[in-house]
Image (cartoon, rainbow, N blue to C red):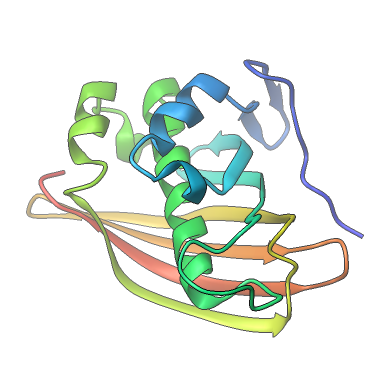
Length: 180
């Protein structure tokens, strides 16, 4: 059985796998401020940067769906919302801590200006292997590759979700950041 690694707030440490940052509760609250209070599903997340690689692992909870009666499991709309929240937080932490070259030139002011209008999902695919209990589950985000082309930053990313009952969903997402 797999669980999320939770570091205490503000902690960071180096490991053989890179520089890891524990959950930054004030930053997470700022990142999620753009969501309605009942749609803030990401509860905590650790982020690790190693060279060009960026990963995040967090705990999520959807006590009540924001748009539909209880389906009894995590559904595609909620997967997308949770992915966005993980993406936004991982990028914010990468900018704040200067974790990877793709965001090394950004300031936090740049991030806040780009978060909603310029960070776009260009393509998303996901596979539901086994139902996930949306009331408590875990998520992982991974930046696989970043490419710059004429002011556009393209991110190839992967994600997965799981719960304590072996539920599983995974996918890949291409993100386009305009005016990068």
